[in-house]
Image (cartoon, rainbow, N blue to C red; front, top):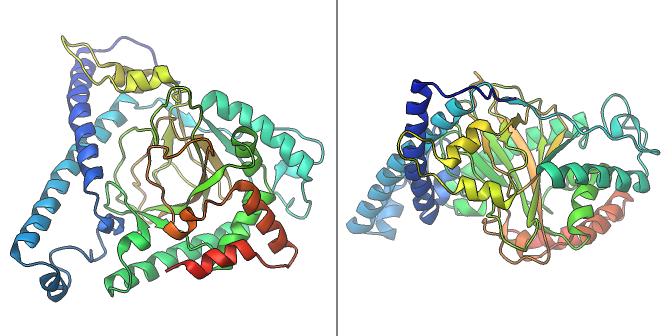
Amino acid sequence: RRPSHRITTNAKRSTMMASVSSTAAAAAIICLASFADPSLAFTSSSPNPLSKNHDAATRQQQSPGCLKMSSDASDLLYQEQEKLIVSRGELEEELMKGAASPLAANKVKVRGAGKAGGFGGGSSSRKTSPAALKAEGKAHAKVLKRDGVVRIDNVLSSEQADKMREYVLSLREKSMEEVLAGKVTSIQRFANVLLRKDRCDLTMPLGKDDIIADSLNEVIRESAAAQTIKSILGKGAVLYELSCLISDPGSQRQNMHPDTPFLEGKGPVLYTCFIALQDIQLDMGPTTWLPGTHTAEAHDAFQDGFSSGGKESRKDELIRTRPAVLGVLPKGCCAIFDSRCLHCGTANRSSDESRALFYFSFKNPQVGYPGNPASIRPEIGNAQISMEDLEDDLALYSRGKGHPLIDRIGESLR
């Protein structure tokens, strides 16, 4: 837990700087989001297909001098604004120094569940009954509604996690090659992402490769992850995101943020399930959450970045004093969180370990646009797949009868 001692003079100076930087960083995030370039998906070590040095002939065809100047100016503006965000992230890290503890697994004992409630520990041969998964999901949902985040272990087998990690890393290279060759635009393979250095958000081509359906079948039908979300949003919850976050060594710490705003009278709008495709160590940039910040009160304080007279802002006080948890997840385990819960990805300071998180989000069917662009192939998002329909399709697939819904979506992918 975070110490509650009085702030020293140096700490006051640091928090005053953080408050000033908070306003600038927030403005920078808004500006960056307003012109976010699809090429942000590319790592610093990879050629950027939309940079001024790439494919001069194509750029010349697309735009004469003035557009190139505008693009160069945008690149410079992005770099300056990114510096503000990185600086703010460093200050927030100082505010939270030594305050976070590992996100602990929520232990649930349910009759009919296998050892550890899922895969791992040699228990994958023992299936968990649907009734037991439903009961387990309800128990996890209580914690999720209270804290805004819950950890569920063994939702994906170790073997499948290894296969999925190998697949997404290979898919990233293939996707980058397709964009560089001009076969597709980068937004058709990567979602927009801020702090582009050594970080990408790779959207999944559901229906093209069965490994994605295999992974979803384990997580959604053979673990309590989907039941946890369904017990809150109902069987009509809509698949809103399907992607993989990859942060390589050198990726910077993000600013604390919610994925969606708090909407009065709307309740939860989106739940996201992060699944670790490898053991996530402390130096690999695990996600940090501030449990309990999915409320109107927390969002009101978070929006108040003003400070004066040496007094820290309500925002900085919230970040400094709220107990935090770190997503140091074992392979195959997941964290499900309310999109309104404050969180951030931390810096990957490992020497050679990339962190890959396979993830999906389901949206409240009573809510239209939740306030956050979806990381999903547009053809999949436009299909408006419900939790129930996806479960039914995966059930057919698990019985060797194919997956007609997923196949139709796969045929539409570009």
